[in-house]
Amino acid sequence: MRGENHAVTFPNNCSKIFVPQRRSNVLRRDQPKETELMTKTLLPLAGLEKVLRYEPETGKLFWLDRGRKRKPGDEAGRTDQRNGYMNVTYKGKNYRVHRVAWYLHTGEDPGAMWIDHINGNPLNNQITNLRKCHQPENRCNSRAKANSTSGLKGVYWCKKSKKWRAQITKDKKVYKLGSYYDPLEAHMAYCIAAVQMHGDFANFG
Image (cartoon, rainbow, N blue to C red; front, side, top):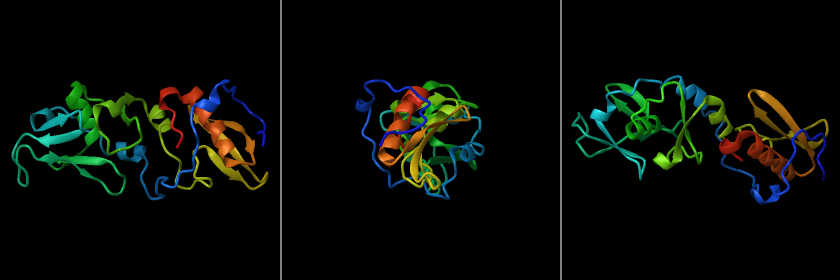
């Protein structure tokens, strides 16, 4: 069915951009947001190059020194089962592996900037999957929320109209994209708008 109250102009070749699908592996309700994670991990990275080596092709870190439970050449880092990100612990402090990887490869401490996983997989820390960005851009490249009624990013069920509504957020402002009988059509509207408004950080969920 045709949507209502569109606020975004779609390109003529929009149907070739993607094939929308429902997601069953949305983030868990109890999974912390990246914002919450970052507040605990903005630690200075200078000096880690003396104890860690980064392999950009695999995204893995390796120890250069000997420790209580490690020897040179051992892989460093472990997955935090609560949120899916990898941490590495040194001198009692936890560092996000993707931030350390960026620092070791570029020599630049990202500081207050964010390091985004381009494909959305927090376990893929290959340098080709990492990019520096601002927090709003990082938020754009996120998956569907755990409480999504559709399992599709940008689509929710409206009890009043008994239709699926599409919407997108940019710079903390919500843009309505119309109401639809078909949730996949609503998702198509979201994805097209995401390409236009989020650019390289568009994530279809």
